[in-house]
Amino acid sequence: MSAETFVGLLDTPIGWLRIEASAVGVTSIDFDASPVLEARSNAITQQCQQELAEYFAGQRRGFSVPLAAAGTEFQQSVWRALARIPFGHTCCYRDVAEAIGNPKAVRAVGAANGRNPIPIIVPCHRVIGANQTMVGFSGGLDKKEWLLRHEGALLV
Image (cartoon, rainbow, N blue to C red; front, side, top):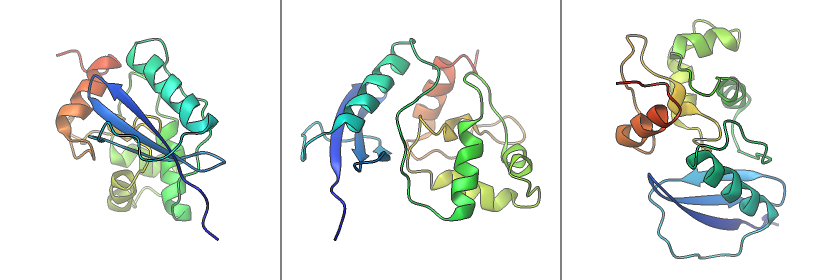
């Protein structure tokens, strides 16, 4: 038996976001969503919409909505480390690898970062290249740059 998926949409300064959730937590956030609602929302998608709206309005720096992303144990450890990167700060893949106690797993950390299904809330956009350059982001580098500027992590 498959779990029911609930959907919410949010219009943001970086485009429409599609929020998917189960009965227990947010399972994904997708960029460039179509503004047509295909399914019904639930309390979790509504809480996520509210928290993201507050974030984009500059009124929120952290999130409390429950999360339920599917991933391997390694991916989950990376995503937990990403969630601990403070608002307005950046780090590199090496820092995340060290934070999970596996300093040689830099490439694997990069792959797990790229598979993060809940961007913004699990702030994979805060990971930049070791030489301070922008590196891949599921929503595109323009959105990553916008998010980092919004958080004050990029001042240029």
